[in-house]
Length: 264
Image 1 (spheres, rainbow, N blue to C red):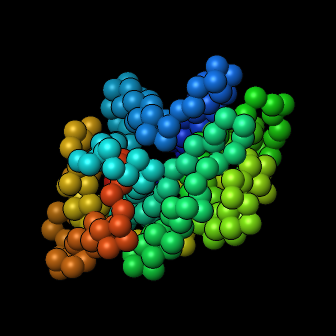
Image 2 (tube, rainbow, N blue to C red):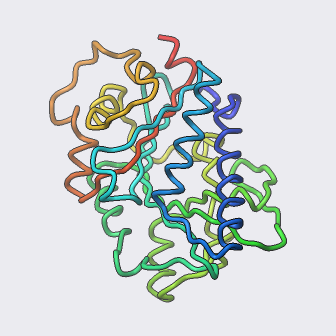
């Protein structure tokens, strides 16, 4: 397997998490509440800027056509072997002033994500955007590395865990999830050996999934390789039809390719 953690993709995801943490802390100090859409837009800007300075960088992102409708839904496709991708379906929620999350129960997004997982074999998570003005602690991630608490600026939590806690507490607190149940999102690209528990999708299926999007940055990276792959129409469109069946319309989509995949 190509080691994604040997590339600067890992460092970028670490940097984004710390930036999100600091931004939320700064805004909360001023009594300003940032939204999921605003934070995700900031992340996209960082990725685009990074790509402009690193032309061999295999991360791209683009806004969805209906970006005003589903600001919390995000898809991340991570290449694990050449032209084979894991699909992470994320529901973003930002920490509110006072250290709590709102409306986790009312929307019941975990039901939507659970249905999507059954339909598609994707790997669903809540993606919590966090930042608290506190003394920072250290913890250990699934790679066995010691990390600063700022890495929870972008934290992933299993949907069944969110369901269980949110049903007990209408407005769960940051400490209800972190650090016991949360993982920094850096693990999606830094600890691939720990994340081989989903359906593998082909490059052509990823290409079809992002065909609905506008404003693609560095789109040639996703169109390299496997163009001769034989695949039926149902399989080809499985990602976007599964999203449609589950009632999702991701506002942003990210694809992370290995150097081997891009070198075709």
